[in-house]
Length: 52
Length: 502
Image 1 (spheres, rainbow over the protein chains, first blue to last red):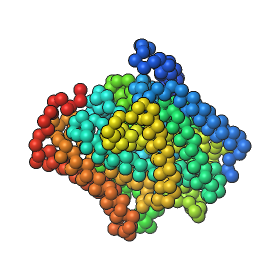
Image 2 (image 1 turned 180 degrees about the horizontal axis):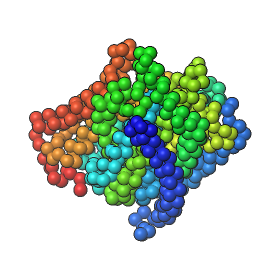
Image 3 (image 1 turned 30 degrees about the vertical axis):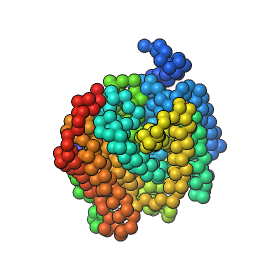
């Protein structure tokens, strides 16, 4: 691990695995809620009142 | 066949679930705005999921793994540059803020407001041409992955990919952007899980220390034998990309994140420009993993085959990774990975087809119509274009043979419009003196470099081929020169302040 390039790629690689794992759960929950809101808004007639 | 019954069940459950969700969304389509930009109702997290799913296709996995196989970890530097570009644009709002505020459906539509109707039409032609050529190799590369990972006969490739395309076409034609968003969400989840699980298993299989040692010793052996090989960790090393290529990539990625229509479609579908900037900042690091994680699989495949008697006959740097995964992933998990890769292919193909169909409808056909179409007519036309694009993908994707690596092909075909449209956007939004003559000059000159690359490299010997960074850099230089000279040598635009979008 003396090579700074190897250290650089190791940090990015393990950081990416952790980030992807986090995003799947975080975005999974948040975006799921946003799909519900989107569908609720789309059920309204065009120009109708929208969710805040 | 490498897949077991449990693998097939996982794949079938995913495909049926995704198709059902996509078709269910068709009931909410009220008009062409819902069909193309989801009624501009998209919030940040759904935008992130959709953008990430669309821009991480099976084709992406294939070419990033190929980079990993040929250039080691250094191949992933393109993802780092892309992430920096997303962060920069998301932090400053460069191009995307005024673009979203303009309320347009596509980029060429902005050019009518800023330059003229004809500039919009010509830009639409370039955008569609570059985009469709770029997308032309998606099916073939995706099929290659499935053939090598599942062990199915190579003769099945065309039939399997045709069925997959038909399924994607079905839900995209009925539900448009709404179906694409919901299926992108499902695909984002399964692709994310698949990529994390696969990366961990690959690391466990090959071993971190063995991977690093294998890459280092293979490079040292190549250098000692006088065989050309890329330094596996240093991207700026002359044997790898080198500084010239990296500098071009920075400009190229800046153009991609501000100009690439499939990415910009998500910006235009966001509820406001602040959400669009937020989405860019949050999604930026995702693009490091987009190159680095499949790059890890490619690098691991290289070390694995090097240590097991060399690459088997019939395999190359592109197909080595799926064969390696087929060998090392256990039953059940291989099904999950194949489902994830099918998900990646579906989300990218659906998103891209819809984007190019919208450009063809909105910027090439609509400006030529004397009488505006009814809402039903608009939807019918857009859906018909989707069918035509699918037919093009089938035929072009099956006979075209790439002159070089997949990444270079994608970068150069994308450049057919990236350089010129990026120039038009930057000049149109930030330079009041820019006019229609400069726009025409930029469009034509910007396309010369990549088109020359495609034609020349298809007919000349490898030693005489044009380097991709030369074709790319020349197109950006020519496009900006065309815009500056064309605008300065002709009259200034008449309505400069009003023409600039709010």
